[in-house]
Length: 85
Image (cartoon, rainbow, N blue to C red; front, top):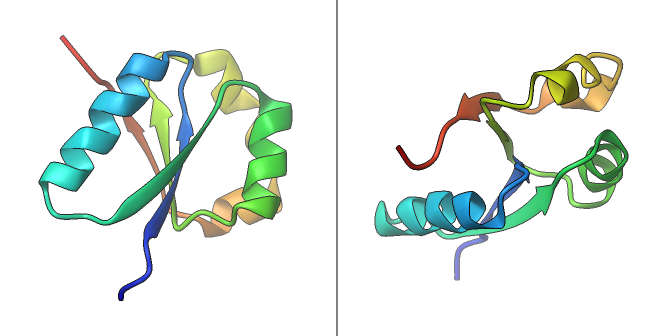
């Protein structure tokens, strides 16, 4: 059985996370997602969960400025996205 793709979601809305994960699975991806809302949670999950990719809510600008000092975040592919509307 193939390994699941680990996705770290920086998202303040659980419904948006569910929507994005549902669309990834509809596209045929086997994925497991963890959602974080704070920089503290982000740093912890980055180390413990070791995601393959980081998907971030496009509308969390204050959060994004706190990511730059995290060296391991720079090694992980990062994309901003917007769910809904």
